[in-house]
Length: 71
Image 1 (spheres, rainbow, N blue to C red):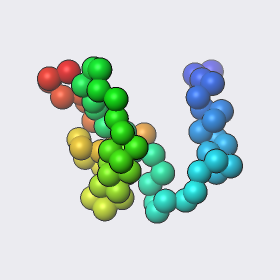
Image 2: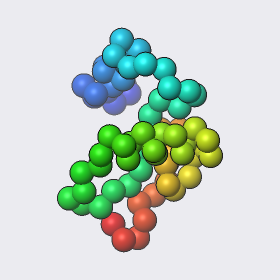
Image 3: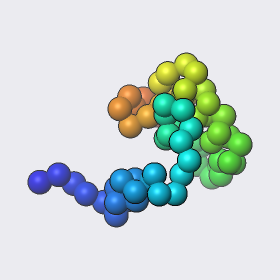
């Protein structure tokens, strides 16, 4: 059986709450403990992902990168 989380239910319904923003709609990146990312940082990471593809700087669920050694 596939692992399901409460979070996945919201991801399935994201079109109800979010506007389309190019090809990528989710960007992930590693942050240091205690750092609270800003909305602008998230927009910049998503923009980077759309323009450059997945990299350690910004990636998606399909292409994950391990945490840098400083974590």
